[in-house]
Every structure is written in C-alpha cells, then in structure tokens.
Image 1 (cartoon, rainbow, N blue to C red):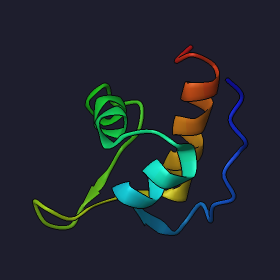
Image 2 (cartoon, one colour):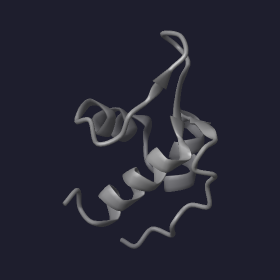
Image 3 (spheres, rainbow, N blue to C red):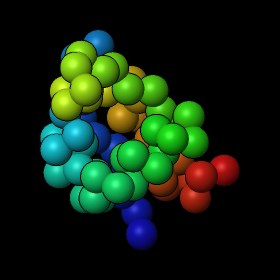
Image 4 (cartoon, helix red, strand yellow):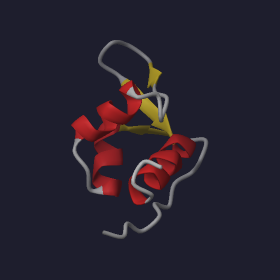
Length: 68
C-alpha cells in the first residue's frame, strides 16, 4: 500500500491521535515504533506524549519501506 507523504511542520509537536489520523494507523503501531526506538517521543507528563513532525516523517519512511 502506498501512503502519501504527510504535510507536517518538522518542528511542530503532534499528538498520537493526530499521527494516527495522518498515517491511517492505530496508536499501537506508533507505540511499537517508539519502543523499537525508530522514533522518539516528547513526554510532557505520563499522559501527554507528543512527536515532532520530523519523527512523523521518519515513521512514514519506515512504514512505506517496510521498516528497512
């Protein structure tokens, strides 16, 4: 499946909900790539987790290239 590249600001913070909507994935996928250290989150509090737009582009590349 081809995913269109998301139009994001590399320096803006995005919530997990926004990422899921942009890339059409579930939050468990975002959590998996964070646990594998493919992408890095910004944890404000234990419940507030954000990702920079640059991390979203890294995740997009990982998803479209099959994680290679």
